[in-house]
Length: 193
Image: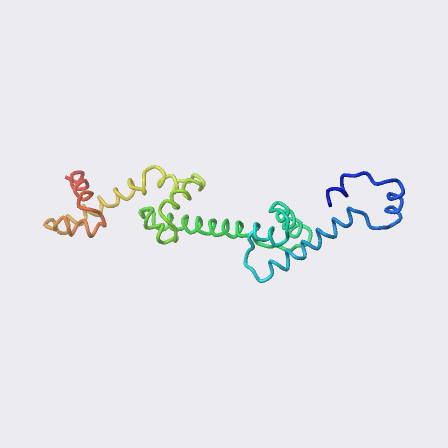
């Protein structure tokens, strides 16, 4: 029905009445739009974020229309209604900031340890590293898996120190102190000797 009002040409007498101050089809559409936006604000009240698909079903419009309503409300009315997508993006941004801070504070940590601290999987950490800007801290982690070159160098220095303090220490004890497997410890020992 609304499309009919917009697409057909009004007869001259109808045009004269509209110009005389009567309600036009466009005015009816604008009123519906404002009514829907009011319903959207009411729908969002008390919620941290709304799902566009759910809002579209509630208003009986498409998701794109909900997006336009949200943009209008934000830009023209100063009403900022968060969507679940925006909230998820904010959470991701917060996690990336936390990851950056961890990488600066603990450059020898591997991805799995950072993942536990950030609260995501190691795969997600890898994805975040790929999307982050290419600074020297990030490059270090992207150069080798889990930042192994830096961690390996630190572990070898620590191994030399441990062997200097107690050269008869068992391999099991050394591997536990370094936090590596026996196989990795053997690789380190061949490089030390």
